[in-house]
Image 1 (cartoon, rainbow, N blue to C red):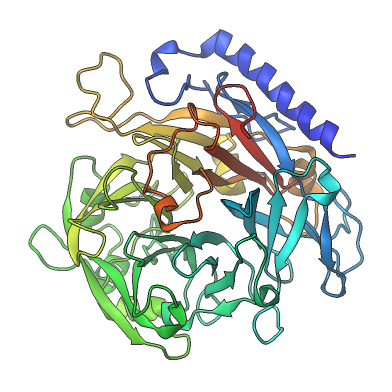
Image 2: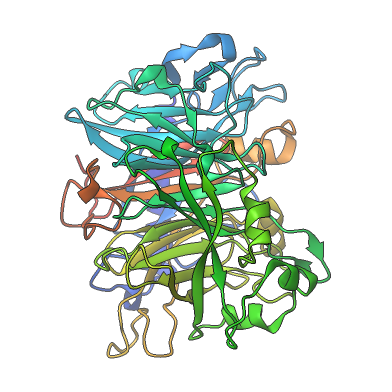
Length: 531
């Protein structure tokens, strides 16, 4: 069975971490939030590598790719947590292996007295949603299929982003594809955590069609979305091509009733908007460099790009036409706890290439500040600036009111260029200017990235990278980083409570080592598995 291999890998990774910290860890990196001592180095690109966690943390596998679904859709090949077997091919580490169906972002919910982890699946022939029963001790009975068809009984696109909307009691799913394929789908859950209407997904047309990935509700019931569509190549790198969106529903309890879709516009210092035509025709525009400079701040406005309940429309084209401001692949975002949903942090991946010389090439983490989540104006500033060693930022979550967890998805090409696999970082946003040696933010000083996870590369990912079929990805990717207490009410929205994963057993932390074995892990920050 797969469990011993995975658990052994986790233990070896912990031992490797202890050795690494004995050689290079620094207790000066520890602080009063998460008990983090920085992992000294990322894992090298080549060979099978173990995950290395900060020594105060441990992890346990909760699901992996070759686990069967308890209720498979055999006719369509939706049979396993990480594989679609429609082609009849065997599982993993063979040149004719079955299609990988990668579990992506995670949502933790406590429903009907049970503890569940939900995730959408990307890659493969079709999208679907699974549920891990964290209370089930038998792995073969742990993973259930929640949805793999739409209301017409057809397949829907593969899924990247996922969140729980407590106003509609739906899982909101994003399909990261350009219009007309991409968009947002809703799957309802009952009080026990089971799908309603047979798990049939409803396309939420009023939210538009675009390459959406990140999706998150605010306290007013608005839906914030981030788009990940890479820009065209240009001299020195790539042009910015993706937008940040906010959907204001007519009825927050029913998104099919339509509403207003807005896109974020960023104003230059002179008050004029930075537009798509400007930034794509001149990707060296000094504005982009200024936007990616720590300490800078620019005014923002939400511009309306669509109103109504019509059929799905091209949100990306509408954002460009409305003079919204494109960025370099904003991917995922979350509200900072304790701010009353007035601060929204999101990642920007960048160009994912060391050869890029354009401003903003390495992306970063941005902060949108508003008087309230419903305000039409605000300001944007960069909270953490990417560089060649810290880039490809993707998933994001708060672990305390000040500790922001950010993980990389640099891709195989950048892994090779810098001979380093992906890492997960803690950015401490507290004002640390009075603390000698602190890695927290201070006046005029950006927070230092402290590595809490150096991702490894499992044997299956190594095989795929070197010799696998073209439809399977190569190196592992960190995805699905998620800290939550599972509260399904409006009061449990991410950002509503102060997370306490080190002091409260109800707060749990998850991530998925995507590709390869497709293993989903639970992290304990105090060395004991939380229940």
